[in-house]
Image (cartoon, rainbow, N blue to C red):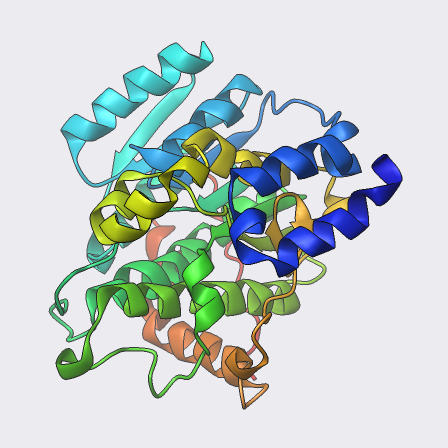
Length: 347
């Protein structure tokens, strides 16, 4: 029956409801070689940093990766929730190598401080996972006037990746994984409309556009960092029953709850991407249920300008220009980021 796997997988992908639900994962896990021949080595001696690991998919991914032997360091906003998550991840995984740092991704100064602290205490970073996400029901901006979804889910991951790049290069072959969402399939990346105005703001749309930007930026990072040993992957976890979904899409959750994936199931491809042999994955691809997938199942969502991702990357490079590794590299105790790795040339 395994020979039917690719055809069945394609049919599931074309039919959104079964493909993105627990039905699709149940069928694929029995038919596809990515599941049936999964013998990846452990992560002993590897360091993994994951954002948004106090609940949901991020928490489940942290447990799974710690069970594989990784030292897991996660980023959280609240110390109380972070400490509860640390204890829970340690108990569930049996690992004593669980730690955390504090920063609100919507506060870029806090992100800078966290990155500098991480570099001061870690020689290398094997896997960076951008998992944190939040849907804001109302239009809100930071002190610079940037809508918080863009600040926290587009600028902050770019800034964090940039500041931690020396540690990633030091650990090469290493990888960066961006966790997207199904909503991004409905949105086109357009720099003129990426940030919604207050009058037309809708939280789920802002979130979907930010997730589309994350996927495009992952591809652009892969293009610019080719040859460094740092690979970039974006993935869609499917429809997962998480606290975020319950808060942002209560109607969807009520109707679809019997078919929603558990957080552990949603985290499966994250864990797989963190452990699969790098040569088999390549770089700059988009994944769902352990297979590379098209980014544009709806043709009208493709960028009208093929250089849009490049322009967005260049804009973010300029916005974070004062946040180069050397800004956080000075001073005693600096370790993993002391070797300055400049950003690739713009254009």
